[in-house]
Length: 65
Image 1: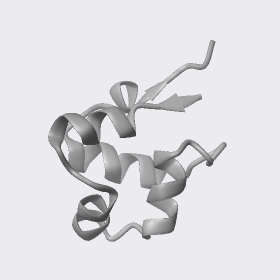
Image 2: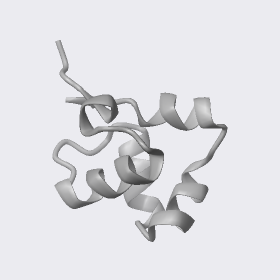
Image 3: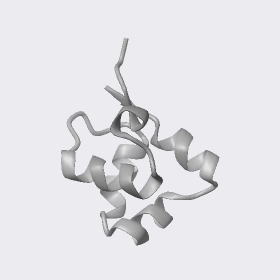
Image 4: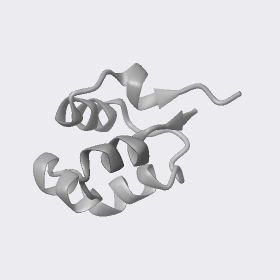
């Protein structure tokens, strides 16, 4: 599974540090998510990120083909 975090943040002109400050999620966790190094991110983290960005989980995640 891939994620669109990088694309969504770029469109909003925000950085991982902005997301960290707003959600309280650690920068290392968000950086791993940003660079798609995380294979199975926790649902709670994905929900916090999606809620902050104002997107659904479907918009945040995409199935790898």
